[in-house]
Length: 500
Image (cartoon, rainbow, N blue to C red):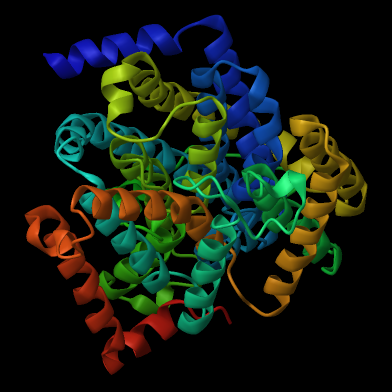
């Protein structure tokens, strides 16, 4: 009964004209940036953070969340029609989706992707609603020692599951932690690594780092790419799947939803890992694996369901524990902090209308996405023809104006450009910036909880091992490290994240 009452409170909060409008804006913008190759949800959310200053907290979070899970829907459109994933989690969809388009079955592929995504998103939102209360109750038992151990586990798991080289993932995480040290020391009030620059007395701004690393770096990288797009289906008809399509895809959709819901909770997991895992599972279970890559509809249904389920359930650790499991959730932490909200279990008790309103908005958003994606396929196809050279000047101007509007500082705009160049260097070196952002967000929180735990224990470092919950989290961290060094696991990881 408490769950129903809480959901009623959430729908009351979400069903206002303003919040419905921001939900619609979020999912529409998410679909748009998912359709257009070159701009992902991380870059878009980073660029829109300054706008959220003037919004109500719930409206801002509803819009940003809509962009994230909306991009998972839109990414499948360009993957199927152009063989270009508009969003990184749709890479796997290209394999069979584009093959279906070449055979004249683009409509069926798009229909299965949209319906599978809707089902998965709805089920994953149910999972969030059911698990939120017990996980928040558990999190309320956490002290500084437990929070520090949980953050260590989160960072190690993010390194293990990061795309590409393990050494590079570790280096990026450490660099993020070091960037988080810049600014004023919480305990002593002394400035650290500010080099006498007043703008650095509070550290690098979250908007500056995120917009530079993801927004501007993405623009520079995309300018290198060719703009040739072979749109195979300029008019798409028959988007409603046939009875045979439903019969072939209902099991893959269920499996993808279940797998994505589980993997989305993991630090470093989310939509990308979920889609790869679901595709691999379907290929293993198939009677004829050779069909995959040649237009197997299961190869579209499973990863599209999984990436949407993973995108939704990645909100669970953010909402219940205050720990961001991936780069997008780190940006959501930034948005909450902008509005003076400390992420964690206390949000459920202190701001229940915000907590449950965000969950309720996900059901509304998933419904809107089906209405946007199926009837408006023709519009998205036409948008795919817009050259990127016409888009990037407006995006770059938007970035600079957004950063300047936060504090009115031209130096922060220069810092953003510098981080953009650094982000471009990371792209060229094949270093994924997501672990850096997680380290940057979690670093100050880790330091604060470490020092608070030691202060309460009068300097006794064994406090992290004498408290059962903290010990369990540290043992899980150690187990992850041990598993990772096993040769078989490392080989499997290298194959799983191979980008060729």
